[in-house]
Structures are given as C-alpha cells and as structure tokens.
Length: 465
Picture 1 (cartoon, one colour):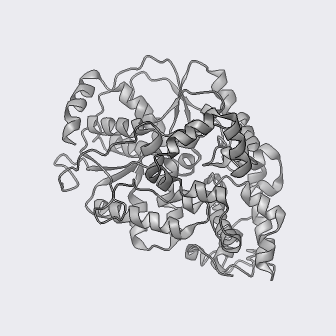
Picture 2 (cartoon, one colour):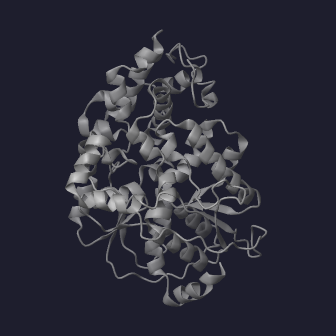
Picture 3 (cartoon, one colour):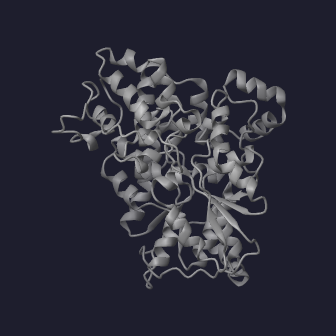
C-alpha cells in the first residue's frame, strides 16, 4: 500500500510490543493507527475536546478508538483499498472534524486529524476530488484571483433561490450563510528596512503572518495585532511573498484548505512557498507570529508530514500564536503594554480546538490578566462544530449545530451582556450562524484596551511601517 504522507516518525512505534496489534498493510502509517491502546477514554462523557461527533451521537464508531478499530480492520485486509471504501469506515472518517483533541487528551496521543489526511489522500487517489471539495480547497486562490466572488457570495446569501441551488449543485447547506469577504482586504504596509532581528534592549523583531482568511475576511484583526505589537515596543514586519514568487501579490497561505481535502501536492506547494519566506526570518532570530490557530498548528504539526525536510521543521518549531508570543514576552519581562481597564464587566473566552490541542489557552489567560481589573472566564465547551467547512456542508450542518448547542451556545445565551473572545475564524462564524455576533479576536480586545496616547502614537507612526 502506497502512503502519501511521511509517517517515519512512527517507524519504531509498537516495536517489541506483542500487544501492539499493528496491521499488516500500510507500513509506518499502520503503526500510527496502532498506537491506540483501546482505553476507551475517548468514549467517555465530560469536558474534553476529543471526538465531538461521538459526544453528540453516542456512536462508538465516531470516537478515536472506534475509528482506529475500523482502520485496523481495513489495513489488515489483503484487499486493502476495497476495505478502505467500507461505508461504515467512510462515515466514521468523514465525521472526524480534525479537532486534534485526541492528540492532546488521548493517553497514546493518537493523531486522528493527520490520519484522516492520509485516509482522504487515499480516497482522492482512488476517486478524484469532488466539485465542492475542489472549490473549498482552492478558496485562497479564488479570493485573490476572482473579484466577482465577493458579490456572488453576497448575492447567494440574500437569495433563497441561489442558496437552494448551491445546496443542490455544490452541497453547501441552504440554511447556512457563507462568510462574506471584507469590502477591502488587508493592505500590506510598506516594506521595512532590514534589521538584525533583535533590538538593543533584547526584544526580538516580529514577523506577523497574516493568514488568508484574516487577510480577506477580517483585516481589522491584522491591523489590531500590528497596533498591539507596536505598542509593546516591537518592530514589526508583515510576512510577504518573495519577489521571485510567481504570484507576488497573492497572500501567503499555510495550505490547510488543500491538506484537509487530501490534495497534498497543492498543500506542499503552499507550505514550501510560505516556508521559503519565513525561514530567513527565523534564522535571523526574528519571532514569527500567527493569528489563526489552525494555520500555526498546520506548520507545527501536519506540515511536518509532507516530506519537505528540515526547513519546515525549523519554522514549525519557532512559529508562535499571537497570544503565545505576548505571554512569552511578558514572562521574559520584555513586554510593556500600556493597557487601561475596560468598561465591560465580563469576558467569556472560547478556545479554538487547535489552541487547546497545543496548550495555548494558558497563554490566553496570561495575556488577558494584563488588562487591569479584567473579569474573564473560559467557556467549558468542546468543538464549536464549524471545523473549517464542516458546518456549512449540507449533510453535516445538523451535526455541526448539535456540537455548538451541546455547551457553547447555551453558555453564550446564559451571559447575554458579556463580551466574547474567540480567536478561531471558524468559531466566530459558527457563533454568528447561531445568532450571536459578539465574538472577536483577542487582538481587537487588546487594541481597545490600549491607552489613548499609545493609540495616537501608533497612528502617527503607521505610515513609516
């Protein structure tokens, strides 16, 4: 059986263990599947992230362990490709929302999200890519190349007829509004002159990675992040395509939209394009900071399995989420943000699944504590259910809503006057689709908390970026 990802990290998994039960087909991929110890922790109720589809359905096939059992059976079958097409296995893998909760919460750290990528790549090799998946995968390119896409999305959202047609032709639920691109995308500031990477006072220069969806849908988040970082005393550059790039004006992209659809050649091209830009900054000692958890984690973890070598590992080891960078700098006593108390009495914080998977919620707590007198609490909820495009897909929208209604939406309705912080683009979209438009990125909140003198200074200096 040919595999499409690099599973060499699991080459020694289960070796010498008579109970490892490694399937006979699939090589190192089979070992990655077999790290599961069948403890069934993933089939328990509680305040855990993993297996949202199991939590709302009770179907054991939709747990991490259930998927492992089905995959083991398929990989132990001599007719492996036929076995991988089994409808029960196909449904179980399709309903994995790639939350990465198992990577953190499972005792064996089963990485079902990455296993799903391999499964999807196998499916694509057999059957090709369906129209909906192709359209979703290419979204970063469509957003850049096709100015007609913005009015088309707005038109579709306001026309019940077009919404029904999009469900029939593409499989996007007519009951779900699509996110609408901003009237004007993020504008890259003028190129900064070269610098040594670290200032005389020990502060690292920052390279801000503005992901595709922030760039096109919520550019105000990138603008707020720039303002906050500058107010903290950091020199900031925005990562931009290389001058030799065939598409020098198209925003950099982590390739995740391709990866989750099993289009691995396209994913490799995007990751390589991004790493070629970020690697020199990392080597110069600059801090690379991202705003979207799924993009950052894609470089840290899933991108490592694309077989692109040491450069991806080097960048992946260094890239930080916005909140992780601020927390790190504060602990190192290099961060001095001029923040004032806010008028709001309470803030609720919802963590993106990938934030939770990499332990970044601790950083969120540390940063929120920097705001004087700030009253905040973490929402005890699992996956919001949007999970990229999962919550928009006609056959999955109902289950996605059930995930949102399990804990998240009741918690929001219980505090109608609180402000909501959610750093995940998908999370904010899911809340909006369920009637709550309060959610914002942490960068927006911190910019609002900056003292006015700092804000005026930043606006006067912005032209010199």
